[in-house]
Length: 91
Image (cartoon, rainbow, N blue to C red; front, side):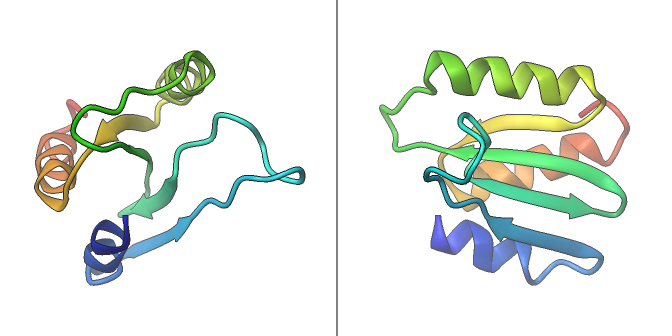
């Protein structure tokens, strides 16, 4: 997660932060939230075998329905791939 956040912070026009859970947070929100070039991204960071919870899946679908991009990522390479796909308007 740290390497993904560090990478995002090097991108021009990117505002990103780690969403901290807890009693005052919203359950199911992706781990990293970013606005990059006017697009909203939610990155749910998982290990190689990790899977999102049902609540996380519902939340990602809601973000997508609202026009944002919400995906499960496992590495900086995954994030780069999402950003490349999103740059052509299909993300």
